[in-house]
Image (cartoon, rainbow over all chains, first blue to last red):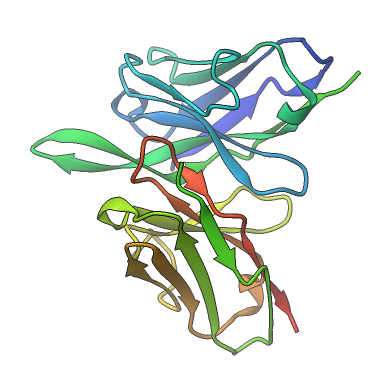
Length: 127
Length: 108
């Protein structure tokens, strides 16, 4: 059974930093891309960032590029999101999400719909 | 960026009725890379449909997706009490995934 467990959320002042973690189990973590998706209170879903399986490629939404850094430790089956220079508009529930994939000629190709989600961790940016 | 517009914003229906939800893209979604999710209050989203029409594992066959290009539809053939929720579409054919604003399906 795929499980994604986020941690690290909390209250932080504007301009501050926070690091989120996502512990993954139930699948071969090192074979799959991973992503973060957020949801501001009462609002819709917003893709934040993705990283490929080997951590060689990272992708960011324009709203967080230059402030957030996605990374992973395949030896620990853990995904991270380092968030710096936080703003009030970053207040949201942050979900760790596993993208889907196609296997073509033995290669796992990520497809960025999200077939498994964690329960989310709340980040509140406020003074 | 591809802008996804979902309509209606709210759909008021009774259990047993058919629900038809629309998702329109500002430009063509390549390879029909369009997904649908269901979200209930306090819960993470759940994948229903990917590739515009493929049901995710464990999703009942009363949920179906259709469409291509810029116009996509999620149909719930007969609403069950547990289907009242918010539904989001999402495209993943461009460099950054984009979500629609959601349609709330509420009990009439």
